Length: 99
Image (cartoon, rainbow, N blue to C red; front, side):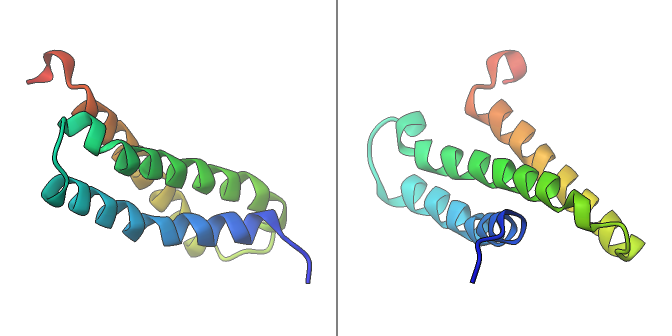
């Protein structure tokens, strides 16, 4: 069995989405200390999901010539959604003048 970067990075990114949600819930509700320090694991996992999705996207581009257009559009929308989540998370992490 060989290691394929495209599928492995995609499944890892997919599996880390609920892990990031649980990490945010647990650190926010049950741990004490400064809020920014507690949420570091949640932020790191969220950015890792976006990074792995980008790796999956770039590694899978070569085999997409005969793919269904609907699946490609759905995958593109999911990647844009992850990017929007990262932008929103970075604004909430250090809001600056937004609050």
